[in-house]
Structure formats: structure tokens, C-alpha cells
Image (cartoon, rainbow, N blue to C red; front, side):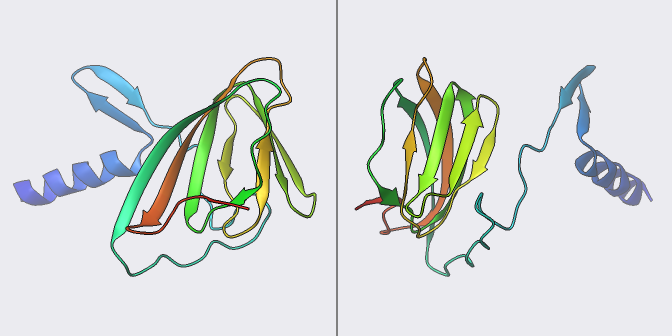
Length: 138
């Protein structure tokens, strides 16, 4: 009986967006949950090879444009500060401001550009595969 009650309590806590720990409240907000990238295309299935997670903090100074590139792996990020414009090779564009999240396009050529007046800082999480690059420049 005790095990059932503890299991039920754990299930309720994990399914809630708020955890009560040591009389302090930790709030958990879902930033992004998606099965498609920012351009609406479906994300590919995960590889069956050995997974490798990479997390990058990228700072892009004001006025800087990144080179055209693509990602062969699923990745997503959150813009912590500044502004960032992401442009696909065909011209489709996403404008981001601090606090926005992105589920990046996979295997599509694109580039980022900081059109703002301050450095753009973004944290990006890559769900890759050992031995596979996370970014390929054109």
C-alpha cells in the first residue's frame, strides 16, 4: 500500500509543472515541444547509432552574419539575449528576440544574422550521433 501511495505521489509531482521541494517552489515551464522545425517541416527519425548530445553557447556580435550552413542532426535552442534572424537558402525567414526558442531545420541550407545592436546569445542543444558533425558549412 505504501509503495502504491508513493508511486501515485511521484506520478502527480512529475506530471505537474510545479515541484515542491524543501518548502521552496521550483517552477518548470515548457519552452518548446514540437515534432517539426521552425519552417514547418517534420523532424527526421532519430538514428539508431550511438547518440551524442552537444550543447553550445553561441555569441554572435551585432552586425555579424554567419556563413551558409546546415545541420544533419536535430537541434533546438533558446535565444538568451539580443536578436537573431534565421534565413533559409530559399529566403524563408524567422525573426527571433530574447526569450524565443527555435527548433532548427535539419539538412537545409540556412544562415543566421544578428541585425540588432547588441550581441545575440543563444544556447543550442544538438541530438547527434557519435562521428557525425553537427554543422556543415557550404
